[in-house]
Figure 1 (tube, rainbow, N blue to C red):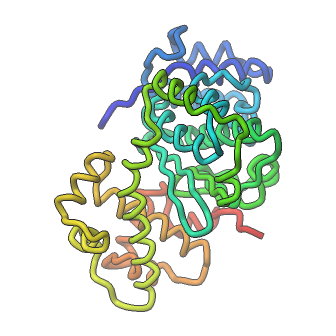
Figure 2: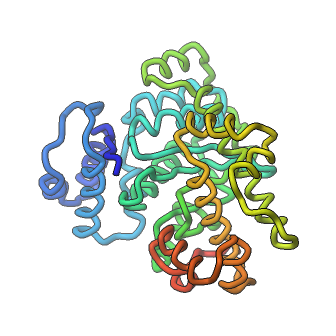
Length: 340
């Protein structure tokens, strides 16, 4: 198993927020163990895992990540916040955000995926042992930053959370909005094209480049590295949609490479550059499609299993439990809040 590291800064800021809210920050810090004073110092991702375990044990309140995120002053995240002050648009900021978050958290991958009507910002955890609340915390912080930068409430077309807090739906809707889905494969915000292109009114390309250099990132490189992943996802969505009505070949590297009009060797090289594998991308796409079909409530588990090319329902159920930590039947009982 790969051991991930993150910067100390996010944990220090969360501890400060906990103290502001009257939580037992001293005890939480004692349970986490020693932390460097330098926000940029690297610590084990286990510190973040332990933070969320302890604070949830001590303070059982709904929408805890959002509560903490709202208490972190603008500017506290350094380069991440300064990107807001220098970006031309929301979309430009989010490209820089996608490059910087992995440096801040280590075990988080940010993808920007453009669809016909929406642009998705997806946050995925690189290690399955990391609690989903970490992703919820990061996306909560992003929403707070966007609302601050635009100086207004921002309406997102869709919000996906990997956590499952359906018993506190009303509280979560107050912060995230009506179009909220729990138990998703990853955390994600779906932005309208209008919001994506919204000007931030404070463009400074020269200063923005300086901030990127200080942060050690390149938003252009991030966009390019995600191109092949986005293209594969788009092809898989078309594949799954068409295969409902007609027989299609099994998903394999040669099939995907042919769909993208490139050689298998080029495909593998591009995937290696992005740190992904074919099997991981296909697996994730199957999970996403399973969630979509289960949410519709129009297909039996056997139909979904066949659609996703599993030999039988049991094989599909085992795969789904590996993805979601629960069976498809259990997921349906506690499934997402549907869009009204």
